Structure formats: structure tokens, C-alpha cells
Length: 162
Image (cartoon, rainbow, N blue to C red):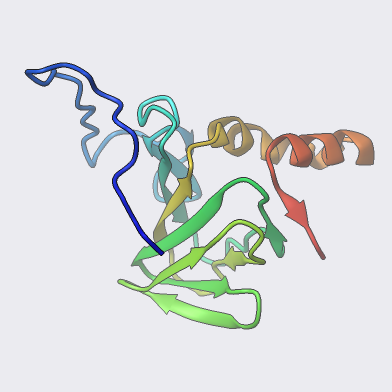
């Protein structure tokens, strides 16, 4: 495969002040710090559509989503702390600090924290997609009809197989 740099996006001559800094102690965007929380490190908006990067905190025994795939986005997992069980489409792996899993579009995957300790990981979606609405509203599906749930998951490119 012949790889090359992407098309030019910035056309100025002197650069610009456009960086976006987020301190480590910033409050989570969804959930409660130290429990189940999501920190929006780089959204599709801030990355200009290139990617979405999120720090996910999971309490002990937090569980996680069932096996699913995405048609338009890849998803990558980088474990920061604790043990996260990752499903790579063929087997469950006890992933620990420093472990990484990349799942291309169409790849079956799942993740969960079944351990007695908290865990933390980075989630990377490429290209960028509006995952923030998914994170903010998925917990509200308990009272949704099957049709409402199906439309929500279809809108957010999440296709569950079990």
C-alpha cells in the first residue's frame, strides 16, 4: 500500500493559535469522577472531524456494552490503569496498563470492567463522529421502546450482535 500525507487543510503561512488544552483535574463531561465517567479530551468538533478521544473511568464491577460493531468508525482502546476485559471478536483479553486494541470498521468488539478495582482507558474513534450525544443519552434508554432503541443505535453507528 502506498501511503501518503492527507490533503492539505491549513492554508496560512504563519501558523495560528488554535490548540485546545484540558487539564488532568478537569471535571468529567458525563458521570462522576472516580466512578463511571467520560472525559471529552478531543471531540469531533475540536479535532475538525479527524477523531474523537475520550478518557473513560469505570468503577469496580462496572460491566460494559455487549458485543457490537461500527460501520463508519474504527475504535481503539488504550488501558491507562486497572484491568479492562476487551473482546477482539474472537476472544476476551484481560488488558492491563499499556495494552492497546484497535478495531477497524466492521470489527466485532466489546469491553467491560469485571474486576474488583476501578479501571481507566482511552477510547479513540476515527474518523471523528458525534459520540458525545451517544455517551450522554445511552443511559436513558431503559424506558425506550424497541423501535426508539433501534433508531438511537442506528443513528450512532452501533450494531449489537448479542
